[in-house]
Length: 450
Ligand code: PMP
Image (tube, rainbow, N blue to C red):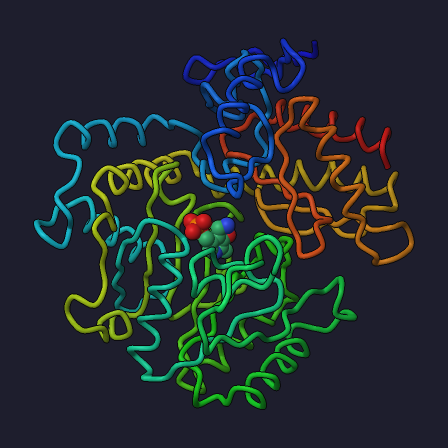
């Protein structure tokens, strides 16, 4: 059994790592057997533990184990799980009505979320939004809107990109296994350009990497054929790749000069995650359209496309929507999540978390040459692991350390085209003590395995 000394509670959950069984415990093992019998095997799980409760920085499993959460359900519970304002607003909405369909008889929570998006997204221009259910759906709709506006077909995306698992977004996603393998044919008119990846592109400056990408677009696609360029300002699943300074702004400027819609996919990086409302703000870039999801609604499924009113309004009436898009309970939850972010200055908290995590990682790097890069912003930070003295990805070591962390009760996620990146995405409600304890555990595991 291992315990920490932090005994604070949040929503009745002790903010303490505590293992009372081996992982998975007996109840989780039983549930995993039922999962295997009833759930399609293509739906994987990172850890074989079933959850009973979660709050602050802790996930409690059905056997009573308290795990430290460094994943936030893949960057979703930014405001913490079951945050008070999210629960209160969603509960009130559940009691009032659950669904009418905004396209049949509308309701104000939808409009209020769109007004909040107008206020929070970068740029002073007139903006409008449309709400959807998932990140992939938001990306699909951003492409539809850009095509309707420009009357062009081509979509440009980047190496290492991840935009979703639907047919169009699979085509936009770079990594073949597991996201695309066996699922073709894919949507057409999607073209891939090289990304700025400072560790692996020979150290090109942002301007140089952008010139290379623009050359590919101009020679292989044609600037006047491109409806939109879609880019994650910090790539998520691809490995938390932060492009060199000036890359995003050069791509955005090229888009403006060529009548191309610049779409920032902020689904993973948005809503306080990087210490700003949106990651593009670190580079003073103002996108034409922004896609959001994940952190927007404190754990309920909601997504949005927000952007220049004249672009958003280029779609004919009835051309956008969906039965559940902007569901009233999810919209109410989003209003609760946004109020939590403002009230608790979660952008400031993300910057504090960055300092703690990067401090701990720099210490680790000094002991372990396998850590070749520490990158990210705010509470979206990662390390890339390679064979010492090379840039050869070490996916096996990454897997072994992740397994060790999971066994010790720390939820960590890996990512990256080469499977050799650890990403840290704690809820912004995690305490410093828990965060430090999670890194004590990682330090110990690195000492054993690296
Ligand atoms: N874009 C980005 C940048 C993402 O990180 C994700 C999810 N990992 C998506 C799109 C797809 O979102 P969803 O899983 O909600 O469809």
